[in-house]
Image (tube, rainbow, N blue to C red; front, side):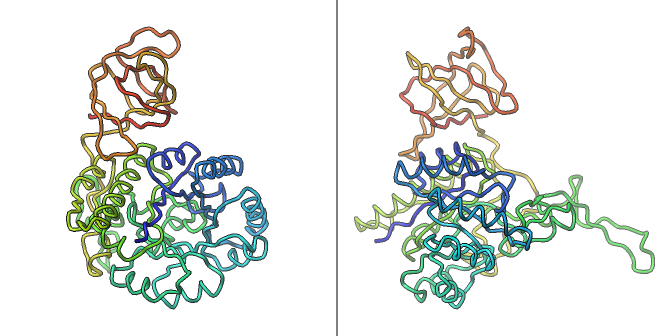
Length: 415
């Protein structure tokens, strides 16, 4: 049976390393100017470093050039295509036909993945892109399981299909939204989305003949989040998705933290592997997604929804409350160096103090190892301290952890 690739986001070299450590087969990143997450993505040097590291451990890196380009963008596009070809990117993700034509012209051997921005929703779309030279299609997130299954059964045999399984859902159709441009003069389709759909709004009504009379509509003291969607979560559908033969399963979130990445990537990695092993042993019916779903709820997230995957008429997709869930856990630390006698140098992201309960996220198991902070040491003086707060970019501290850990291990804190 086919085991799908698990594809994770990476907005930096360190995030890429975390994603690989916790089970991603490949990561996708963007360039600093030409992807749809320009505020999170990498420059040429960091991309090259990421690609070299990935290839050294047998992993892949796909790079997004998925803006809808204007004529003045093409000089930069030509430079980036040549660079990506030279540094060995495993594929370029694109949606604009002009950009795709330029990739074919300048890097004819470069695999092309058609971005979800292209709104691919049918076998006819797939056939067109296949004839135009695409190696892979990233399906629109609006598709139901029946439509995905139909595409899988009728697409060209050598055309790969990728789908999103977890992460934010954009209010605009397949992410093509102009609300950000209208309200903040930051164009989503040029990589500068202000995430206006996540803002707080007051909705008012006025009488036609008296426009100055305004009545607030359906909101509380926080306003209303009428554009905000819940996050996609297809952990319960892993058996069906694997059985349909998808080539790649994609997690959204280049702006997310390393803790988010570690949690979500390892959860889907363990879920996929468990189902595949159960299927091989004839015990597929024993797959239980509940433990994985509970794990996913331990990161900061909006409400979770299967979007239209299971029901094309699903109404449970809007996040009117606007509140992120996960009241119990937060990012604790990342191991950056091992000293002696179980003392580790860790980078913290939130306040730590003696007596805090921490959990180690292992990369080869869904289980987490708990321990209590009994000793903290100042990184410079080695003196014992009781508490430490992170700086703007994190803070290093020495901590005693009674287990063998390696670089990059993520630790969460129980609030």
